[in-house]
Image 1 (tube, rainbow, N blue to C red):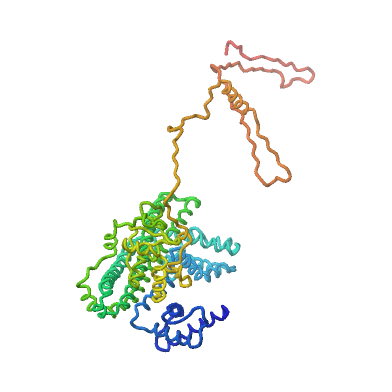
Image 2: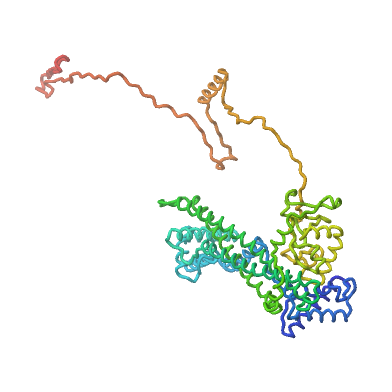
Length: 623
């Protein structure tokens, strides 16, 4: 059968199983059906051979087994598989989640953005309508208030008009679509920063929630809730483990309850514990990030207050970058709110998968069994085995690693999710925490830890045998594939949450390294003045060089090719203003010349006139 034909057959089987379950009143997803089909085929007790083509009878048998398994009302194993599928379908790392969240926001804003960028407004009414659309886009993108709240719209409009008045619409419409989208994003960030600053100054902030304060209250509450559920799961884990250890091999007590069912319940709470630890780790990381962002937000707001304090006009190149940085920090707060909400919902949605414990193992059954046993926590078990170490000389062909002798010890990819492999194999799936202090065994580039020294010695004598037994146990209990992180043995069922990152696969233990030391040549800092000159002739040469510079002139020219393309400058020394001053000021005065002429008025016509000239000027010594 070709690969496409095999896929078609499998899809038909999955579809038929889902239809039968729906006909009996139970709706199951195709992902769930596919996982159960894989689990039943892997279980050798069902008699399926993966290397042989399934006959019609095999298909009918497979469908019947899957339907019975999916409709089993008292199966902790089925609830664990449902929990694993739910977590794998909904959980993703922080970076991918925020990337998907931003992509969804962009897709929702795309119609509004397209309506603005494709606008061809000409009349005053059309321009006014376009401006209102820009205000709505800014509010929707920033998430600061509702576009239907008139107070929020007025405040956003006032902030937008201060940076983008109506007169700029003509320039905006002349831009290409990409530049319009970029300008809309910049306007959103600037307006967001302005509104946040006004809110901090008590002059606005309508419809803006105090996200830093909300996060400071919500994160501790979420952490406390997750820790309380984690403690409840651990309590069940310790009780189930103590009971399993007590009744294993005891035929009398073994009749009191179903031991296999109790182990499946243990797998269920262990898986719940693992998922809660993942969620709690993300919440703690979010708390640390929020604390850092809150300090940055306060410093940015203080810098902005200092910049605009008692100033009527501020250059945009100074204040706009501050508004944009303020907006980016606020967007980060919004991302943390969404992430925290998703993690809280996931924590709540994991709880229904634990209801089966109250149905199968109520307190009336568990408490009598706990009266004669000692309940130990994981920490107490590890503490009991601390100090008992493997003697490496007993295993000359195996590599053992210890915390104080190995770099990157805490980052080693330990197998089986940190549980003791020997206990899982020898006690039919009992999950006990391993103690790294006993020693970490390296076998075929994989690392194993154990709950006791005896378990380590027994496992080390034939590791492949016990690894095979664990694989066979995982085929019988498919939920162990994800719980024990057996994705290398069952690559086709590797979940997303446990898919190894490339950087984790490269981590190697470091037990030896090359080191070297070097003695400094000069222990004290040198105080050498590079410009110092001891030679007076060299100083004279520099002085002459500086003096000659005063006689130089900077020349420039222009050609036809460079004309009107660049600015040209010349530099000259301006002439000095020279003044002189004498010791005293002096002056002299002479008499005004005065002359009188007599006889020029005329006389008789027969006789010539006689003109008399009289000098009336006074002498110099008389003046």
